[in-house]
Length: 157
Length: 157
Image (cartoon, rainbow over all chains, first blue to last red; front, side):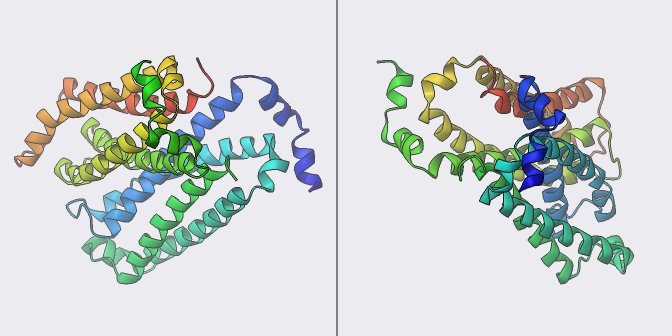
C-alpha cells in the first residue's frame, strides 16, 4: 500500500535504518515491555481463575498499571519498528494474525473493565469470581500467548 | 573435535538447526517461559521491596511454581536453541553476560528463599530489611538485564 511504502521513507524510518543501535534498542524495549504487559496480565488472569487465592483480588487488580506501562512501551517501540519496515510487516501473515489477536485481546479487556465497573464491586470484594469473568480471563491467557507466538513467528513466515 | 562442535552435530541439535519450524517453536517457548519466570519473580521481588503491602508475601509465593515452570521451559528451549549453534553462542560475550545474569538472579532467588520466603511461610508478617531489599532490587535488574542481553546476542559481539 502507498501509505506503508511512504512510511518507510520518513525521517523516522531512515533514522532507525541508519543509526546502528536504535533497532536493537527498540527490540530490547519491546521485550521488556512484553514481560511487564503479558507477565502482569497472566498473573492477574490466574488470580481471577482462582490461583494464589490468598492475594486480595482488589490489590491484584491494582497491579494493572504495570500492564499499562508495558503496553505503552510496546505501542511506542512497536509503532517505531513498524514504521521502519511498514511495507514488509504489513504483508506479513504472522504480523496480521498478531494484530487481529491484539484487537481481540483489547475487546476482551474492555469487556472485563465494563464487568468490573458494573457489578464488580461485589465479586471483587468477596473474591467469588463469576464464571463469565473466568471465561474472559481464560480467553485473555490464550489471546496474549497467541500474540507472543505470532510476534515470534514474524521472522519466519 | 571439541564438545561444542560435537554438540551441534548431535541429531537433536541438527533437528533444531535444520527443521523449518523447530527453531521458531523453541524461540516462542523461550519467550513464553521468560514471561512466566520474570512475571512471577517480578511480582515477588516488588512485594519484598515494599510495593503493594496489602498483598501478603506468602500469597505472592503461590506464584513461585509458575516461575519454576517458566524456568524449566526456558532451560529446555534454551538448551535446544544453544545446541543448534553451540560454537557461535559460546563465543558470544553477550550470551555469557546473559548466563551470568541468570546465575546471579538464581543466587538471589535462593537467598530470598532462605530468608524472607521462609519467614513468610512460617506465618510471620515480613518486613524486609535493607539487605533483603538489596537482593530483591538487584534481582529485578538481573532478570531484566538477562532479557536485554538475550535480545542483543544477535547484535553485539
